[in-house]
Image (cartoon, rainbow, N blue to C red; front, side, top):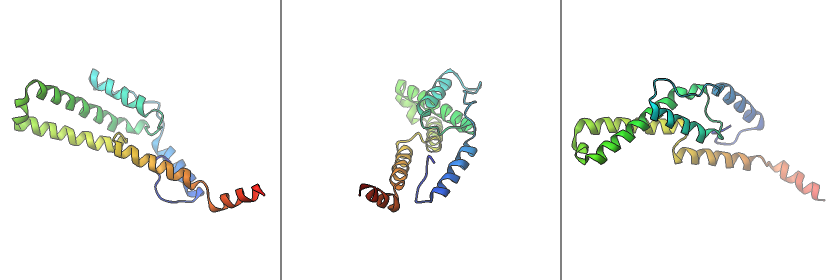
Length: 147
């Protein structure tokens, strides 16, 4: 269970793992869609490579991942434009478009666990999961084994 919080029984944990595995689906079709431009496809492959170990992404994440790539590419373009011409930041339409892309980016980050905060939540859940594996009975049984 990649994002488990709270205390649950081993039986509940196994059920949740099975459901998460089923709902995540396969990950054999995580390829950049044709409508993405070259830079967006490069971003797509980068995110897939970086999240590969986590096993969080499935084929159903293709749409949000594609949206994230588009928003990242847009933000990069907005930054290039404003760096080349700082006066762009004074234009209302430019700022509105940039703000919209920024909001999309942050929503996608939360959905795909790309933000430091999202990853911290996952690591906290994983640590708690490891700590919870030892029950009181486990500890008592260890003491009995020492005798």
